[in-house]
Image (cartoon, rainbow, N blue to C red; front, side):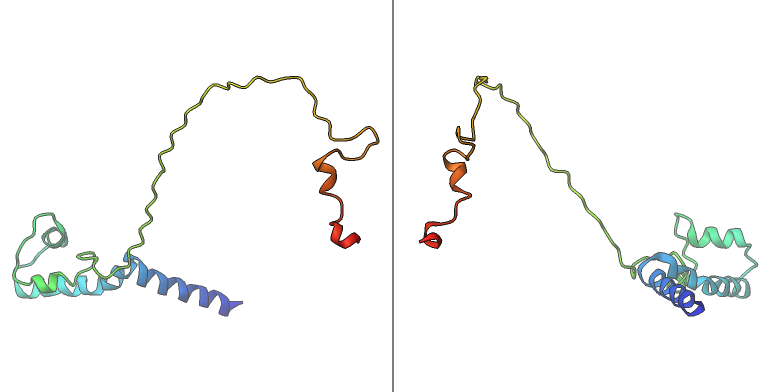
Length: 132
């Protein structure tokens, strides 16, 4: 039973890291290491300022843009995108008035003897080649 749960967990992790943005969480150590690099090379940068420098809408060029692109959630070029496109068919429905008149005429399928009448009786008969 434990092997089954371990296999399910492993397959889930493989699926999430290969087909979704979940693999970006694997880059979190790069985020921490780059934060330490910033604090060693320049004046002390707070965590909030560091996040704003690297994730704000305004791109701040701090001289290490190649390293910045290695941070998590900076690009999504290596993910498999699954797109489901649906189109709704255009259906036009026009109702036309019925021009036929309905009668109370009864259709009889059986003869007076109780056998099937006309064509209906012939479909149940064996082919004549088999009889002769």
